[in-house]
Image 1 (cartoon, rainbow, N blue to C red):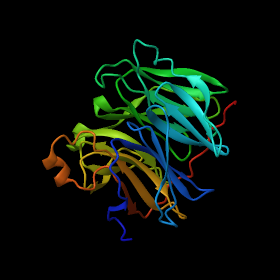
Image 2 (image 1 turned 135 degrees about the vertical axis):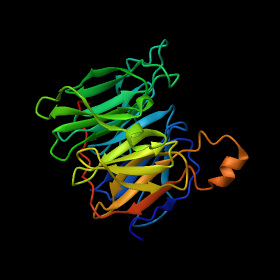
Image 3 (image 1 turned 60 degrees about the vertical axis):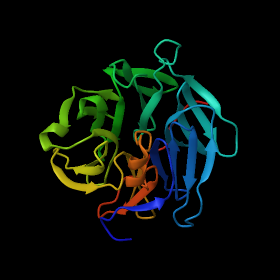
Image 4 (image 1 turned 45 degrees about the horizontal axis):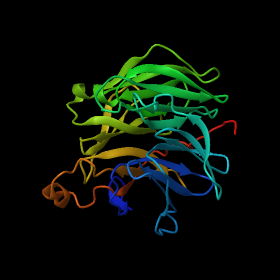
Length: 297
């Protein structure tokens, strides 16, 4: 595979592909189609057809867990043991018949806390939040969010990155990994500053601490230095990339999920025949090993 060239890894027609996560132990990539409630599992070395599991509701994101996965479903967080039945761990406090804000983007920190945000039901109001699952309790950490997204941690775990996609700004928070406490945020990146289109969606940080972001509606992925400078930009063959993950045996294969949900016309669909697929690109700097969630079951 040519370095820096984006190619189709798995041809799909996902409505809202999201949350790719690489399992080093099994050498497989997991990801979801949020709108269809599907979980995909794929081995690049075998290059076979992905295994697909369909659950009963939308799935915002996945993280690794002991002998399985944690899934942030629309209505709550479930443990999905390998070969077993899903087990509900916690309910979504915003899925209560009034707000109905489903879970969205999430990621674990290095000690296994599961950070997961919600999305406003109208995708416009600032009524969503960011939570942290720690020692069996789901704690609200940030409020007044429209679309919680872009969660990532610096390699030294000194910074937590997060975006409310509606603001088109990526924030960073001083992070105490020992306690899980957040400090006062500052603006890490403002897309307006760089004249970038779209909104910041899912993200990943590489081993050098550079932050990669998928620009939904912007048709590209971008890489920012630890000081927030735009250093790389890659055009996508579709307008709605959604999230990024590092994988492969050397963690130098970048995987990118995408969506078709906002391709309304037949002309749009014909213009972007690979939209909704899983894409890949070889990069120079490897990614980081994704930690597993630590939880009480």
